Length: 599
Image (cartoon, rainbow, N blue to C red; front, side):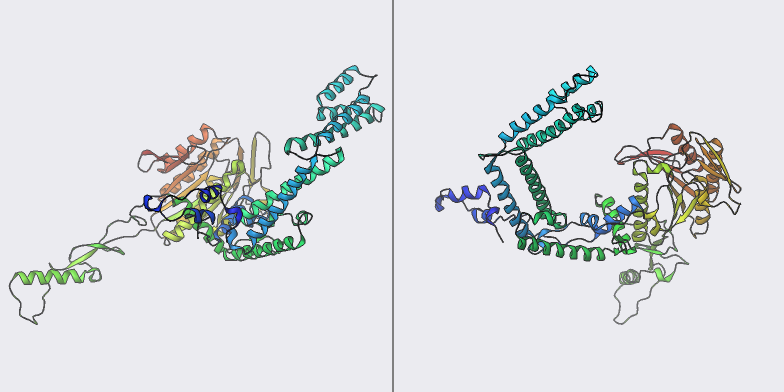
């Protein structure tokens, strides 16, 4: 439905322009005055898209990864996460348009009625009259001089501080209190004249000007809310109680009804996204929401890729492979009959017998071994991956833990969708380490720093039944224990392709020696030796270690050199993030002994 306010100025000019002679005018494309008048846009017309519930899943998971389980996903955050088309909500646009016009008219009436100039003069005079008695004639001369200077410059903050320098409950202090009130009123009246342009003649006094200023501020606030609600279909942001003071009740009720329909739509989209209500009134995520979030992550990561040959893990050609290829090769003794390309083998036999001369009708085709061809095959290897995520105290700096969890969720989604035969395990690393499932990743958080001393040397006998994890400071980094857990898990996977992805921001600060747990800061060479020793055990087990070294404000050359030493001694790789936007990675590949840049 078109509205008069949709008409552009170009339309008025077009309708008033003379029409050229039809015989002297070349054929014109469709459009022109009619389409301009109706507000037609060939690009936007008919493009109202249904609301996508994946926005709710993504918003809920981003919130969960940043806040963990400490705070629930609220209705306001749900509304911000889902993008709605206002045309989907019946009556929302006309209702808001009418309210905007009503408030604009009220604002225009105020500006065309009143004149705040008398109030400006009156506020200035009232301030100077009351401030004259605030300058002390006795006492400290420097205080009196500073008060007089602050009054001349109308410095509210300076006068508030000087108020405490005057004798308590003295006449000067009481006079300065009144002067401060008059100066605040003067500031408000000055703001009124500077923010809005008045054209009326009805004089305002100071109280009236302050009242008009409050009303104009409320009108501007409501107009901003209405325009935002019209743009994003979010009537929940409108202050209905304040709006009821300026608008007829039936219009407010109509908007409340539109808000109810929006809330119902948001509830339905949240349920479609796998979100469920909590007893506290918030939202919690489900496995369905996790799948939607992973899908959106993968779309973001791979959305900019150019077209290329598709495929999964590139396998090795093998005569007894499990994956059959379209290409063929001659049959060899011992080849499986199930891999034979029967149509091509029959064609080869017919061509050979036809070359020997004409064949009598009904003569059977005799196939020989040199006629037969079989499909080439290759193996489809499986890969087992353990992802170690650093959740020590330093990962909270710059929100590094969110990036680590987002990478873990994307990797889990990729393997589930493209490599369903692969194995994946997450390991949470802090003072100790734990195996974690993909469903636990969003809620794990960096451990709070509980020790502030510059030098820490602690030892805990973990064989003592009276010592539990809750008795330990959990913000240290135990790479040794995380690698040990990863090696034990990878050792039970039936594949020779095993790797560890270690996501961390620096040196290890904790390690085990037997049942004794050592926690040392600054990092100690003893911890590094035990960590490298465990990394060598991984190498002996055929496990490749990939170190993802995240940037940190506290990162030093020692952190970088440790990552180099670990990768070089174990034949692994190091990924250094080069740039704040994470768009370039310097990759030291110790498997192929070369360095490359990914960007």
